[in-house]
Length: 343
Image 1 (tube, rainbow, N blue to C red):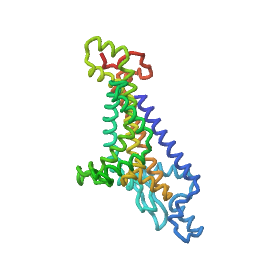
Image 2: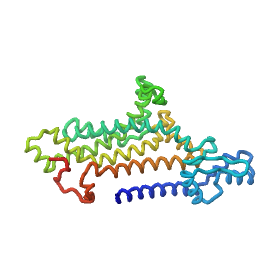
Image 3: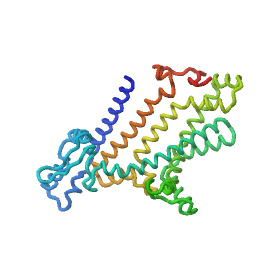
Image 4: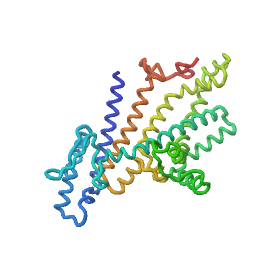
């Protein structure tokens, strides 16, 4: 119980650090969100009044405290006859879009969730399968193909891969739509059809990491003593592969968790290329217009998703390795030592 609480405490500390840096950076930047609200012409008195109404007339650490308390208690903007209420959980209010940041994020989150769901599933399956096949055929044609494609995918910029996918499969061949989003509850088939290209693009880029990790680790595992002993005992190569993959469960779990958190937080380039109005596009638009409440709220949610995914990965590790549950998580595995489920 105590290690779990320590992990939760560290996660909260990471969130606080991210928020602190976000507020400090944008407070020191030469931008004033109140200018957009004040309009033109804007006298110094009107500009100061706009800052006070928006809460930007206080030091950045006071603004940070107000943001954190508003998540639980909500907050109000302005005073007197003109008061704008933001109910909890309040992540700020966009005076440019005239909507609460929580509402804006809630509208965009299903898009990012849809992209992340399919992309992580596809890149995990393709990456793990191709890495295992390459490890089994080390030095062969399939191994060279998987290695070469992995190097290209890991080096290719996301915008290049995305644009090529649109040009080839959408514009030239006409097999798939070039972008857009259809809500799942309206038409599940069209929902998936419009997301095939974003899923494939992200799976190609991120699946290379899985393939390279699985290939190198599988080659190492298949050369250990327990694998040789299993062969001598008459076990099939497929059974040995299954045991080797079990030993890779922990690093793969961490990698999948981080990818889920990052994709849920929004993929700026992919969403922009395929015309998806997700959290990444929301953050990019807010940055270009200096919409500080949206920037802070989106950054907070993105960081929260990554931290929660990493925390879930840490807390589930003992379920995959019983030695961690017994307090042996710090001990390094000796060469040739199998995982608990291996023969």
